[in-house]
Length: 340
Image 1 (spheres, rainbow, N blue to C red):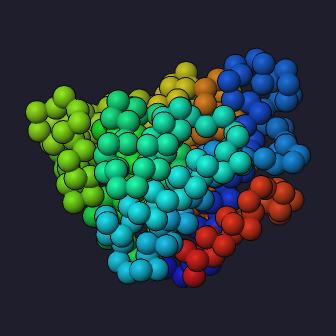
Image 2 (cartoon, rainbow, N blue to C red):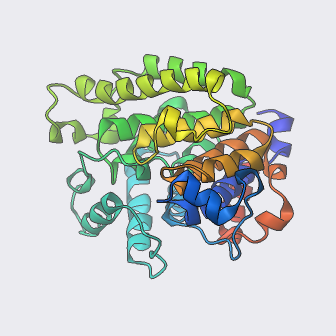
């Protein structure tokens, strides 16, 4: 890891960016763009709400981060070592009185099933769901230092599968964590989509059995390779649309028109990336564009913030914004751990 990577404090920047995007997009979710403009004024001038309250996107990111920290305190990150603390953190989130931010149905149903001691997590996973809840929380997997490629991919897919079992949810989560990691390492944004497409092709038929167990058998697929390839193929299709959109889309047009509204995992990844790639060196403009969208604005903006913070580091965010974000202390504690 380079000195530049360490000094930019990418993990802290990514987590704060994720939460800031979440808070900026929270009031605009479920609104179309004309309604957002009527309520907030010109999108390039959108201000962080006061107080800067976040949604379940940030809450579940913190839950995953705490689970990963607990798992790695006990040794190398392995499937059995990771599953229990992450599962416990997801259940704790589910039962928390602060879980009142309109969370997705899939997360609620799956976490309720995960409460049952001794129930295999595969029986809780919602095999038909590829909602963006799978990957709006996965950034910590890309921020943790010292993981092998196999550990990072397996952990990204396992955390998704605890709630969202659809193969596209797994592939999109893997891609999201990989994108965060590449940006932390200093990859230029202009080459990012090409690298993600190559990664998707390389992993298209790779089923991480050690991490996922028999999850594939709960689908209608004839083999685990057929199961996971369905997910990568949907992600490859949206990455192709993203690559074209980066070159052709006007920043003044709703990004959702090019890459989808973000309610599902592959669209959240693509539209979050599109907003970042339209303004790779202007993080606040990227967040504002993501929050002024007709789709799942908070999830799109939280992913945009995670990418921008991983790329630019903690200095991407003005102090007057970062100091106001809900859960700031928790975000900074995890960020400092992974920046150390």
